[in-house]
Amino acid sequence: MRTPVFAANWKMHKSGLDAVAWVREFEALTKDLGAEAVDVIVAPPFTAIAAAVEASHGSGIAIAGQNLHFERQGAFTGEVSAEMLKAAGAEFVIIGHSERRQLFGETDDSVQRKVTAAHAAGLIPIVCVGETLDERERGDTLTVLDRQVRAGLDGCTGDRIAALILAYEPVWAIGTGKNATAAEAGEAHTHLRRRLREWFGGVHADRCRIVYGGSVKPDNIQQLIGLEDVDGGLVGGASLNADSFVSIVQKATAQQAR
Ligand code: PEP
Image 1: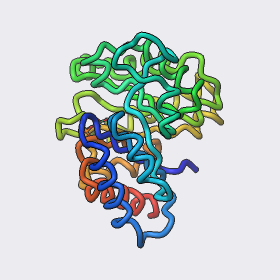
Image 2: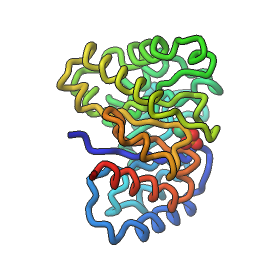
Image 3: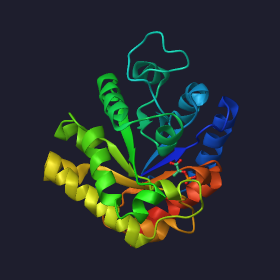
Image 4: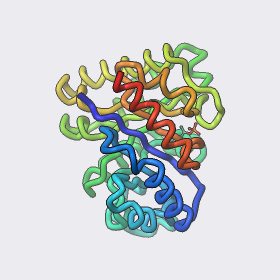
């Protein structure tokens, strides 16, 4: 049984003060709920990580970086290493987000190096994969996912596959308000699980959490979380407001409890 996980990707939004306010609101909204069997991760901008870590002590929220550099240190102006994220209190890190791939030249090779660096520093990667609209329309979705997973996770042991989070994020659904249908998400998630089984073994693949990302909102989460291989969500826009993020988590856990 995999514990569902929901990660909030704040992208380039929110200061440290905003992060503290969000965590306080999250706590107020969830205080009467009892211990839900769900993991919650928040990925603030680098500058808000320390404040988010401090504010989230005892809240059940874990903090993630949104990116890292694969080198440990050096002359890389503007970059942050895995060790630096770890020292700031992050436990997870998003790697290979489509905005990094499309806007900042991230490649399958750099994803692989970042996954290795994250593991070396004791961070758990949230590795994003997903096809563009062109690739989907050409019928290449599963081929693209195969390439991204095979290259990005190359060198990972089975234990590391079991612990990491794989995020299926169709690029055409991110920030567009247009989510994948249950059939589209189901096909991709089932395919990813099958490939993880083939490449890393069934025991490890069955423990790995595969989450969906792409315009997740309170009104569409239930159709997605009901799918067998969807273990949670990576939420961008709808996570900026604690109320809508909590609503997504609550609706998902209610659906899973059925
Ligand atoms: C994301 O940033 O990973 C994402 C899925 O964004 P949105 O929910 O806004 O589509």
